[in-house]
Amino acid sequence: MPLPGITIRPADEDDNAAIKTLVETSFGSRYDPMERDRTLSLFPLEDSIVAVENGQIVGHVQSTTMTVTVPGERTVPVCGITGVCVAPTHRRRGILRAMYTEQHRRVEAAGLPLTMFTVSEGGIYGRFGYGPATWENAVGIDRKLAEFRSSAPDPGGVTLCAPSDIRAAAEAIYDRWRRLTPGAQTRPAASWDILFDAPQRSRGHDSDLFAMRHADGYVLYRFHSEGWTKTIDIVELRTVTTTAHAALWRTLLGLDLVQQVRGTLTDHDPLLYLLSDSRLVRTTARYDVLWLRLMDIPAALMARTYMNDLDVVVDVTDPFRNAGGRFALRVRDGKATCEPTGRAADLECGIDVLGSMYLGAHSARVFAAANRLRAKDSARLHALDAAFRVERDAALGWFF
Ligand SMILES: CC(C)(COP(=O)(O)OP(=O)(O)OC[C@H]1O[C@@H](n2cnc3c(N)ncnc32)[C@H](O)[C@@H]1OP(=O)(O)O)[C@@H](O)C(=O)NCCC(=O)NCCS
Image (tube, rainbow, N blue to C red; front, side, top):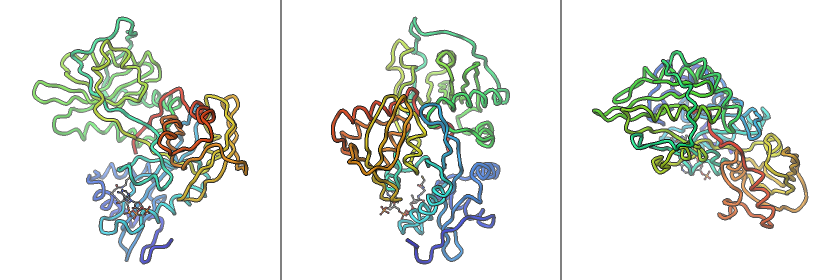
């Protein structure tokens, strides 16, 4: 519905300064000029949407098309959205809803099956059909006490290097990693520039970036020093093989003067099982990272593969876009067909629930226990649950 006095339109070059002020004010941090240029190369200004009142920018959304891996090591083009903000002078008048209506109209016109983003607050986006779709666990490891089991591999093969010497290798390893990992995106040069220019932005007690590499993995990290107490903060650790995973963790946990190593793990990271005392991997926080929405239900459901055969009719509600309906989902040998149907439903859920289940990080059975998914019988619920499982934890590749 149009908002009186508010125009929703594409951004142009003249809006740049006002958008920068709005985004900085909304998120409470300043861009340095080079970072703003890089952000614009990732999310081109001409693809941004602004809300304008009396010539003043009061709302902003930016987006780009990304190539994202879905279960089955397949890739799909996805709309990635970021920089969503409305001026505090204009909040709760429906401006976000108006900009999102336009944003999703564009995605539909472009024929993209999925949209995704990271969110500032968990209570906003369910109404727009998004569900949290990946988990991360922030952990702290007491390095001085950590010991590897005698059965843990000790493959070696790690070299210490300057961050400037690792970039090309890291890009190649990342690319292999993201092809295997549901939720991970191809990574443009500007995102690598932002990561590797971080040394210049180190402040306070944090060191510049340090790096280690293996043929099938890399880690970038910083030291955080307070007096003689040193902690390592892992900035990015990507491994393609379990050998590289064990080798890099052994080297990180071998840094003698370090008290604690902090990083993030997905739910099934094998580190816990490599150590004699798994409690030393202490989870300090757990949070969602990527949120996902199905834009074209049949196209999205047919894009990924499944772990077992399935024959169900799913009734999906989508109040925001009115793009739900009843769909027959049939899986044979991992591959799905999906089409609208008039048959009675076996399962019912909101489209946000499908978004959460899509990359395998959330279970249909747990949604059913919370009455967010209703099944005609438990056999079909269990079949759905098993079909949506994945072999590798989903993860966001690079943050946006
Ligand atoms: C979050 C933000 C974009 C909302 O903009 P807005 O124009 O006030 O939102 P709208 O008025 O269009 O609200 C749309 C719906 O979302 C709900 N909503 C908006 N902000 C919400 C919040 N923080 N928590 C829960 N619900 C929220 C509204 O109640 C409304 O619900 P309804 O349409 O179902 O009745 C704005 O407050 C903002 O810029 N915040 C700071 C930056 C930020 O957090 N951006 C999001 C980054 S992911």
